[in-house]
Picture: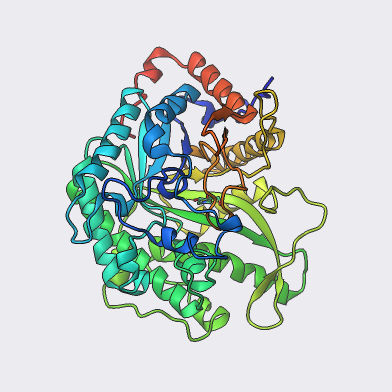
Length: 464
Ligand code: IFM
């Protein structure tokens, strides 16, 4: 029998107005990479390159969501969530000449309509890392022009899917696109130079600001935001050099993205201290575009890191002994999420309302007699719900929480080995099995709905 996952008794997170959801991303679940006019993406190229992903895994089949989408929507609705966060694959919906691909849009229209028919709100990310390869061939995010192409794409999608979406998110985790993609090469396109990372980040954020305007012009009234991954970094050493290392870690992971978005400037210690000589080229007016007001901010949080000085200008990760870790090796630290939310509110007075757009963990889950015992995930989620609840009690406005992920999927450079899903996927048969955590989440959502007044329930499905 599944344990019960729930926020603490009396928490605002248990009220009907709080949005509970699950999340996925196009490349991680869709498969069908070469059908109905979909163009190649940088992740097709990268994952097909020997040595880039664990076991040589690619997104070629993934969860076959492109053909199994209707059953997957029913699965989502069956969980009882209020909302589903998904992403649109840019190479599926836009031809290289900028014109729409009707077959790609048909897929997303049917998907979004079925979600809507079930009363599930739709939160749509425009860019979750699957850049069309033809744009990478012209420099990708190192080319300023890509920011303008992204705005064209955002305008097209907002126009085509207007009325089917309750919330738009421009970019997912620009830190990962910039740093892992162009700074250390762990992700597509696999380039490794901090000067590339800072320039890519600038163009990503510029693209975000341009896209906000494009979305608002083409789907007026639907809230728009961006999703940032954040990391908690502290040091177990009181040595000032190690304390400074922890400060630089958070600067690099969090403020590199949040400061330009919310304060219109970059934390210059990035190029004055951490990566000397890596300042990006910023043109007059760019920061005003980047700091355009957000309707909400998505926060993705997973773990804590312990930092020491690297003996020069940077930091190094010194993993703590004897702490709880996930299948990814990530240190479990719910308190870090509360700390960060409180810090962001203190540092950025104009912090918009927050959605936790991703939180969850990977474990080596197996189906035994039709059941998946994922006790650690249930405990992980419950403790993170409590951390968010404490941050809300301290005055941080959090409006919703999306568990990552709906189902096991392609975990980028780690392929299919790492399982983040509430739902187990057998990649041989594509059978989906609700893990105990999914059953526990479902049971919490059912109880919450049963306790809600009829008046509160009629607001479900309305735009926030
Ligand atoms: O799977 C990813 C997701 O695509 C982006 N955020 C982190 C998740 C877990 O690594």
